[in-house]
Image (cartoon, rainbow, N blue to C red; front, side, top):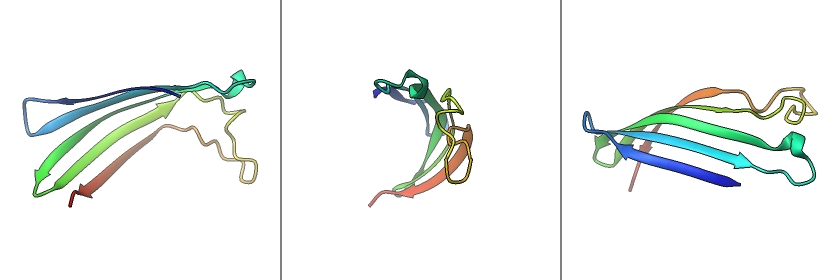
Amino acid sequence: YIDLSANVPLNFWDLTLNAHVGYQDVKHNSNASYTDWKIGLTKDLGKGFALAVAYVDTNAKESAYTSANRGRYLGKAAAWASLTKTF
């Protein structure tokens, strides 16, 4: 797995831009190899709290990443949010 990630502090509102791109090379099964990416923002809320939002996606082939037991494609795009606390 090759990973290129960056967290870039922005000059306003204590925001950090989060960016990621990765490539998974599946040996002997090129149909299962894929690229994934993420773009997001993190906000420092102070006192150890941070709020993050991101969009993640992949170009994984549906035929290679569909769950056999439920028939669901596991490579769909998604947006998510998190609230974390550092101790």
